[in-house]
Image (cartoon, rainbow, N blue to C red; front, side, top):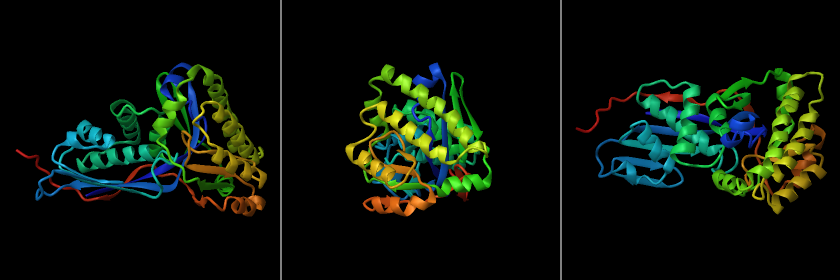
Length: 333
């Protein structure tokens, strides 16, 4: 039996510039962190007592005799890609799916990590990120960028640069005290609205030429935001102000990014003292994060009473195997 634990990610700047059709031409960059909410994938070989050969438990349960009959596209394609057979797979998570935190990619990375471990093989972070990107974007043909799979694989607070050759992951060099202060100034709330990221991406992908200018400006903001974090003489509160700037730009890149309800909550947060914030993920719902100085946090909490507050801590681990009990497996003759 194998159990993997894979973090979810919080993307602050540069979202959208990780889309392949943008960064191959213009370059791209995102500033993001993983935090202490996780996807757990439990995999073992299914004992041969049943009239089905594969059992999957996620938001629903599937029992099939043929891999081709699996309804979940990521599981079906991953099993075919890595030649996996006769599995019992269980997925559970600390946060709901379709919530803007890269949940589907964290699942993909954790599942691939578990499959390799079940085979008795080690897959490094780069391999897992690359194969999760291939699984979701090519085999499953889901619209979206590359940052989620990379963040889930590597973990930590990183700047991820994209170019015509691919990507590189650069940890953000920030003092522990400054990083702790940033963490304590961020407040996250669940809006309750969820949508598939790929659906939002398709809806937003209609006017690529119109949004290119906004994406280029969002790309440039990554440099500014990183400078605020790494220069101890800079005012950390500028990070919050820049979040507001990037959110205003993000909303211009597509009609599906925000809703009237989200806009009202966001405005309430600013009026209560937040310096800035953004909706996490592709848009359409999920989690709102605000940058709030300590003296205003009670007030922001009060005006957000209709939403679920979700405390969190940054984490540095990335995907990992937390239980490893190898199994002898002999394919059916």
